[in-house]
Image (cartoon, rainbow, N blue to C red):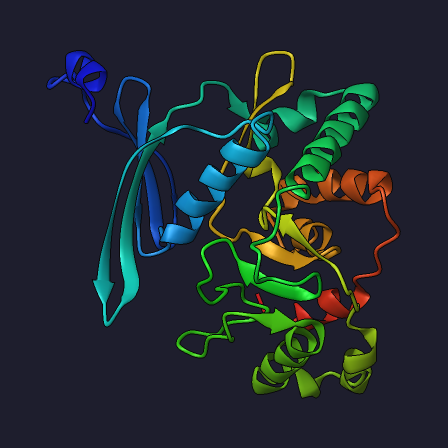
Length: 269
């Protein structure tokens, strides 16, 4: 804790939980400071946030105050990440109040941020057609990982597509009549770009004028295929987010075809 933080520390502050999901809780622990903790909190998120702040500082992310991880056999299984509390509302809680013009403007703002995120440089040893998380750990995305069955740290396009198909088959995907089409329907790419990996209304903070003030939850970030960010926006979500998905589909800057990814998600979610 820095001298400034020590001076502002309030021993009588009452901790308040702000959000919870399986494997992760976020609490306001001091005025202006939140603590994210749980089994889903891993070094990849902190690494991604620091990369964004270094290479794309106009992309709004919370400042990190401190971190702590627990390891077993060299693998993190629990983490704590303290960072700035960003005041405002989630886009999810605001979306229904917006008119058509505001919805269009917000979606364009999101795509502008995605364009900036994509400029974050790859590590020197990561060639354009290879994919990896921000810290080089195996991806935990359900399309690529199932429990202890984790993918290689580095993936090329064929390996990524084969991995999705392998997990699809292992998860009883062949019970669908059209399952034989999946290998050909999975999109192809020869370009890796930096990707948030979980952009959705629940992870976007906006101010009273619905301008974006923070992108949260960077734990799925890394260098992935150029279609990956859009595909992650279109994954299964709360019904309250379905209209936002339609707007993001309508305003997307490229005609990405992710029907194969969507078919795989019938069993991989």
